[in-house]
Image (tube, helix red, strand yellow):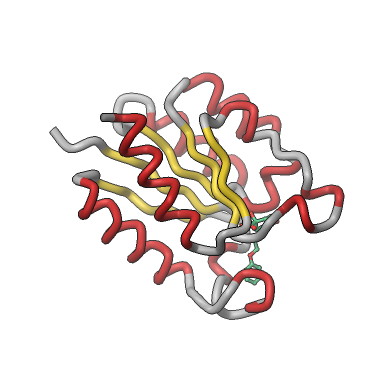
Length: 145
Ligand code: CA2
């Protein structure tokens, strides 16, 4: 049976392609989700793509992934740098997590250099633009094979 991946995007990523193209590129969230679906098809995975600006909603979706998904791809947005709740949710469900950032967070302000998600992810991709989502799905496909 096809492995199922939950693709989560955090706060403000619904603004992709509409503001700050110099940092985040021209692709919209719809483009990113279409890229995830086409990549998943190539890899024989199924995906469920969701975005939320609400920390608790992301926590609930991570909890619900237990028993419904085999792995999670997440761009936690700014919650990467603040959310112990999202860290704890990933620790609780113990599913393989791939963390993606469109920008190179290490080249930016120091408050972006630490991510609470990285400690509970099996890998982290940053700075490759939206290609990072495709790369992370390849890594998840290998991990789940
Ligand atoms: O580089 C990334 O993918 C980030 O996760 C994006 C977050 C930022 O807080 C992280 O430090 C790095 C911000 C997402 C905001 O996305 C926007 C996109 C277009 C216009 C405005 C915001």
